[in-house]
Image 1 (cartoon, rainbow over the protein chains, first blue to last red):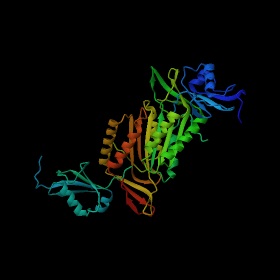
Image 2 (image 1 turned 120 degrees about the vertical axis):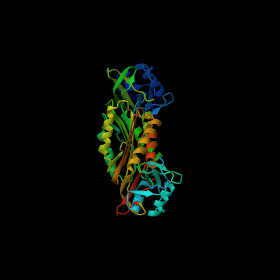
Image 3 (image 1 turned 90 degrees about the vertical axis):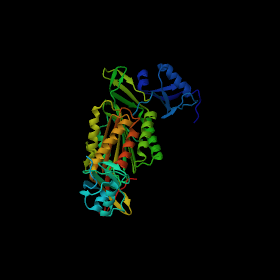
Image 4 (image 1 turned 60 degrees about the vertical axis):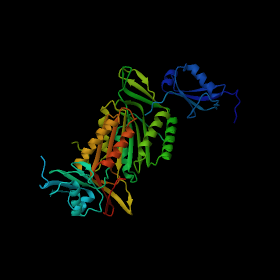
Length: 87
Length: 87
Length: 142
Length: 142
């Protein structure tokens, strides 16, 4: 079902590690009146001042390049992932 | 102390695995009136009919090529080693 | 979705129990085990006392499931188990356990290396190095 | 001369105890363990039930000591332990245990492979594959 751009979308946003420390929360449900991933990421960066931090973005559990022209749908999950340190 | 070739030398000979099965003993002290390793090995092969078996020879814990001209001294230890199967 | 995470350190007993369970698998000839242990590193004169691990668990479990499948496609293996700790793992304790089994040894080293590298580089696990003075540093895999 | 041989199979408990002992070594970041397990092979319709290991112990211990030293020269390791069984090791049981530890993981896989290959190829250990019908076959490493 195609959404009108004028509709708000609700997105689950998750933060981890040093990012969660900076945002001071791990998860939030936020509405946007635009649906380009790049714009959503930019607005979150501005909201929490994440410009100095390095991170990757995942959309629905897959890493994506947030500069690609990717459209986010209502109910999608975006995560801000700082550098990996497993092992 | 150099030995005269005419002196007998006593050699400890050890047998392992399928070779020990064939010789029906694991260790023996044998005297030889020659001191070339190649001749000693040949005499043992003949004594126990080891011609069909594949093996390596060690002299005093080191693998040697029994066809090299190696001299065996009194008290040395020679071993007949079938193929290795460790691990 | 299978869960590859354990709370707290991975004990030597947990590892021996995993080994023990493979003794009924009579087509296995070679096991290779990788263990990641927390090092007492010194970072700008601060001494590490523990790492506190967290993860984007849902994505991490999916990624590890994918890594497991691609490892089975790439290498001829009988069994493959992967465990990672969440929460605090102290210096000297184990937080990562990869267990590779095959009928013959040929494949096992490369398979283990492949899995360990893939997990370090592509799975969203995060580590907070906690120092003896209670300060901390967010760890980054090189 | 250090003795690398144990009588009978190497138990999972023995392995976990070895791992446990390394938890006080705080410069270790990566362990790699190789385990050789007896396979239920079928050889000309005979089914293996156990391998009975024997060795030229004095020479084998000297050889393994040399392998240990050359491994430390070739690879940057913290610890290295090697154990091999003598006597009967049944199908599913472990007869060979190599335990490599290093500050970082880079070296450990190649070091483990090097040791395992050297021991299989150059150490005088002999194995009698005992079949379920009590016949046997002298094993040969390929």
